[in-house]
Length: 436
Image (cartoon, rainbow, N blue to C red; front, side, top):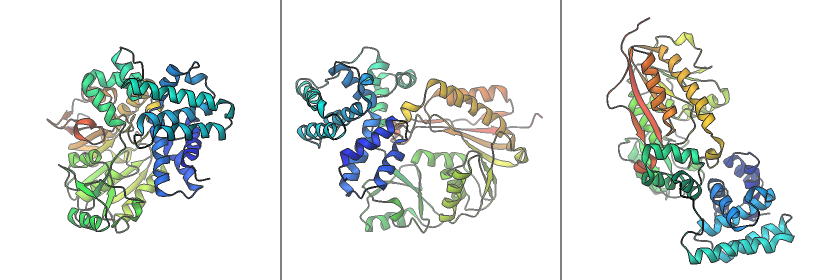
């Protein structure tokens, strides 16, 4: 069975039952041998239909007599695929989108409803011919943006409060794009120029990233990452540009002791080692052994020697008290800055989960601050755009820890639609003296 739409239906059905999107896609792809073009179509349909779930449900709500949640589950999934192609896939002719969706209904137990599927999709096509926006949209900005760009209201609300309506709309649009892949060149093994020319020779297009001396962005499709030139030699690793900014803000120096307290899977840890010329000592701590194994594999591929592994919860590692020149706390967070990379994440997080994370972040920074020597540095970073996990955590910490100060001009919130990279928050704090 090599029909990419049927395979997309199977993967999407998994996602609707709680599977992670990338896992569901991998599971399906492992069982078949698809041509490149079909793999790309399948991936686009599954990621796109998952991202745009709320918009697609609203179309069913507004055009069918039964709301989306009252439709048989598999039929709802099939309609999502049809509407997604009609609304978002300009290269697929409307007639092909309709016919293949009717075919899906017929082959998956809904042969009695093919007329309904056909009629519903054609109704959408007629509306789209008459009006630029077939959806009926509510007045409230958080609801309107939420339905139009497919986010829960609470997320659009959090962004509206910080950005206002025009910028929030741009951010929502940015978050629905296909993510780019950025690389960080390992300057201890290679150079940006060398990697650039190796890629060019292999027919892979890259461009440099402003303000990031080690950064390159892939701008053409590449095939499997592991087969790109220089991967096995440890010339580079994959790391988004905003995550690269964190290493530079920490600014580790050769010979120092650095602790990375939530280190796995190790993108920032290995960057720190490269920036220090692989001299000194880096403690990479994490409580998940399987993720730390990934870090070790990555460090070995990049030929880095200065990283030591420590398995455990960073809220309880007294052996590290007063030992670090610099500490990185890349805290577990809701990931609202990386929603374009994780198609289902917007539906998994809730205001309650954000509050729980905020509590965890507060505990982590309070405990790990003890690992830092006098006059040492702590960098706090997250890949979220929620003040409860960022500015509020820092404000609370500084209010209760008088021997810490924020270094002037070091708080940086990366807004993706303005800087064209993942959303991030980072700030640098300095310990003045010990009041213990």
